Amino acid sequence: MAQYKDVLSTQSGWIHELARVEIHPDPNNVLNSSGSSDSQQMIEESTVVFLSQLKESFHENCQIFNSYSEAGKRFQEIKLYHLAHSAADFMVYRNQIKLVVNNTAHGVIQIAFANHKQGNLRVNQNASSSFDGNAELNYPREILAKIGPFREVHWEFDGQKVEAERVAKFYFEEFVRATRVTTKALSNNEVILDQIKTFLHDKGIDV
Image (tube, rainbow, N blue to C red):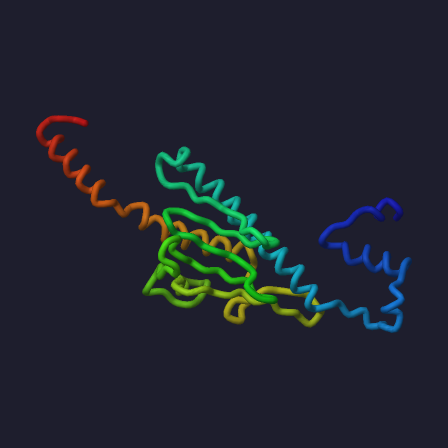
């Protein structure tokens, strides 16, 4: 079994840690026979993992979605930015609208739409409050860490367990819809230009 000593994965890393402590026990924990883990540290580690999974899913979604834009010629591409001074917080951005995903408190991951210039954004006024439908997105939503009966950490939205990939899919779709409206909105100058082009076209002049 010596060949497995240096193998450390997310699935079996805890076994390696048990063996390490067995060989080099911590004198401060000699009397602690329960082997209970620090719940606060567990949640902090799970927060980074969950945020990283969200970020990776968003990154993959952005790459696939942007591949259809032909370098921004067909539609505005979505950008993903890492937020400074954080372990895994990030933001996606397009057309003056941003979606911020960050760890706002212990065991709390907040997801919030905002207008880059005006602050909070009401994305859908006729929305429900469930991941099964269109969520009410005009205010920040929170995903909370919970510790299960066997000291495992999972994440819940409105009391229901959720997975990072599913959360990313839902919010990516909502973000595309929200920013698509902005993409279609033309400025006054663009409207006037289109009217001029139409008028000239009717006169047989192509520009």
